[in-house]
Length: 244
Ligand code: 1GP
Image (cartoon, rainbow, N blue to C red):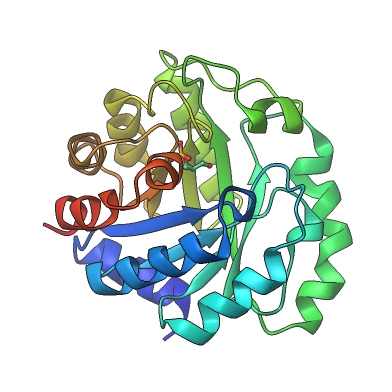
């Protein structure tokens, strides 16, 4: 089954999914091995792999480690086209539709397209919306875009809907890694009402309770990075909360 078929079928059946975000700069090999073991035991659905800015050359080593030691699919969540790697299973082909930076709407995609055509990665076209999480995040600075204000659900709804009408297959609302506040529940509820493709949420989710609130508000998949980097023992607790 393709990654997208599995994501869409889980969403249709109300089976909520949990993705652990691995920013390779934030891990040592030893810590990564522990995350892999815990994730396999806890029923994590996906690893998202990438970061807004990578400064250490560990991607290849870590992807090899992931693919050799567990069956959890690895989906690239790239900050730029240097992060495309054939060792992963798939890639979120992100168009930053909340912003007005043409390079991140279509420019980088043109550069990446011939390589993606040549390698075996499953490409998942994704409408990526950056939402204000109460602090300036790396992704906001690096993308040179303004996040959607957290109290402007109507802007998020119209943007997500436009993304779906353009043919994007996932909508990802992200408060940005390390956000002070996660995407508001009301915004998730409103967006969910208007779109029919699966809804992914991430950024600033630090507890099982916050993950459950996001799911109850309509998210089909929850992504957690920072909180797990700080305490990998959260993985089973988050997984239980999200899947339960
Ligand atoms: C960031 O959605 C992800 O793009 C995860 O955010 O690191 O804050 O969990 P956190």
